[in-house]
Amino acid sequence: MTQPTHLRSLQALELAIRMGSLKGAAAALSITPAALGQRIKALEDYLGYELISRGRSGVRPTSEVKPALAHLTAAFRELETVTRLLDFQRVDEIHITAHTDWAQLWLAPRLEAYKQANPNTLFCVNGVGDVPARIGDADCDVGFGVALKGGDVDVLHRDYLLPVASTENAARLEGLPNDRALEGFPLLHIDAYTAQSGDMGWPEWFRQFGHRRTGLSRGVRYQWVLQAMEAVRADAGFMLCGLSLVQAEVARGSLLTPFGIKEGCWAKRPFEARFRSASLKRSALAHFRDWLLTEARATDDVLARTINS
Image 1 (tube, rainbow, N blue to C red):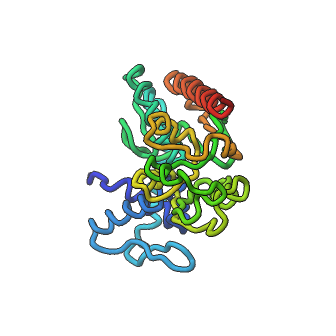
Image 2: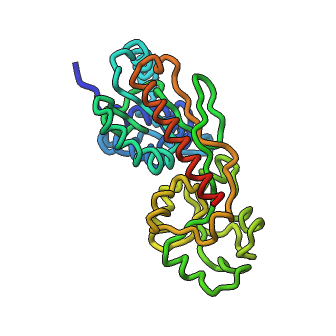
Image 3: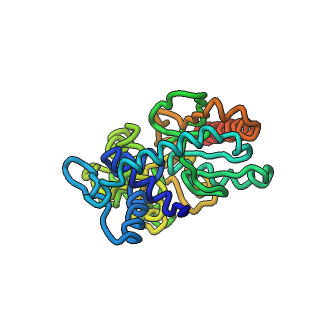
């Protein structure tokens, strides 16, 4: 039997065609549309022809893909069934799909200590980690801005949104009139807050706290904080984001909150985790859930002390 290859690319292709959208398929896999497109492109490069076309009606399969499409859909449906049936084999594996910023900026730094204390537990977070990605439902889904449904849902921590800047850009504000301190400075807008969860963006922040009168919506848009942080570090602009995601850099002084802690607001919804009921029967996942809730409470406590100090 021929061994299947490019499984992740095939998964991306099948989802994009079935949903008619690269963005929708990427959201289902908890990766960026660019990452999903790269997976499909890798398969196109391997095969030597295009697999999808994009138009007003969305993503559609090319003529080369159509004969295999029914088999591709059926194959992944069967893989999901096999995953559910053989779930008991993953006693010490934990698969997590999570909000990209939360996974990279909040979970990843803390997870290393957990793995050292629990070396027999292996992780796969958003398709990357100690164990290969698999087809089927994750053991734990973490979301932000929308209420998760089904399974056991736990509130993790609520974030606090405020401006952050590099030390260089923060220094440039010294001596400027307070009511126009950010006038003309480049702004970085994060869609994960404004477009996806309806939280405060730069226009709302300026209307509440001042510091700028014109061009409130101008600037560069990013989907994730993770992407915009490189621009902040390179002195390319000011970012409005959740303090919990940049708390370590603020504590080190590599990023600053140039207008102080008080000029911010709480996010409308907290980060939430949905655990599959069947998965929680495994002691490894139950232990991870307890640890995650403890870390989330600690984050809430630190944010509360910081903001109220």
